[in-house]
Length: 116
Picture 1 (spheres, rainbow, N blue to C red):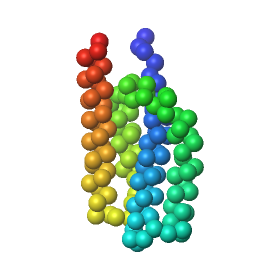
Picture 2: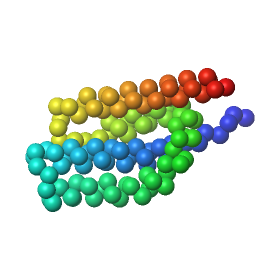
Picture 3: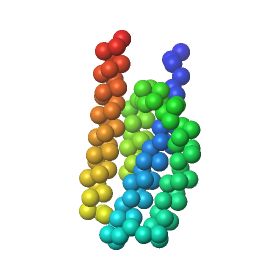
Picture 4: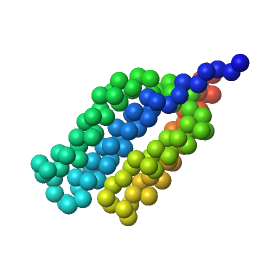
């Protein structure tokens, strides 16, 4: 019987906060001004902060246990949840985040093997 996987629920909570920050920032900067009315864009981000903070200690072990299917789930989450009004740069940022998932996975794997 194989090892039980940890899942990625905590990673998703942390990623959701990061994506929400990106969305809020994109919306805030859309009109070139930062004002009181921009606070509405940050409300959703504040709601995600508590769950992400609680999930952080468990997210790193999940990252180290990440398999290809879970990486694809994280990439899908990035594509679905990252939505800034600057449509011309959104695909490039999403692609960069996808590359970041792969790069972090590679670095984690590399150092896991090096320390073994």
